[in-house]
Image 1 (cartoon, helix red, strand yellow):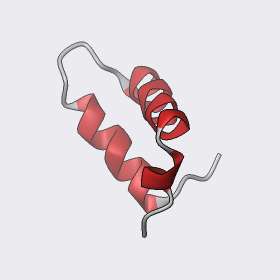
Image 2 (cartoon, helix red, strand yellow):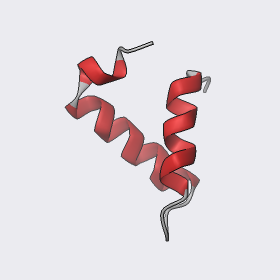
Image 3 (tube, one colour):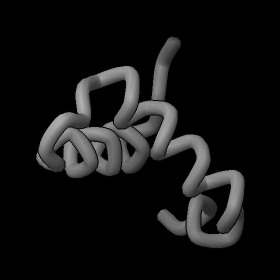
Length: 43
């Protein structure tokens, strides 16, 4: 699956948290974007 650079950046930032791996970071990023769609539309 191809992701936008901003989504990739968000996932990398979330991975810095203790105990958060790549899959958890991806799930967290998608959840955050679902809750705040307008924030996900920024370029």
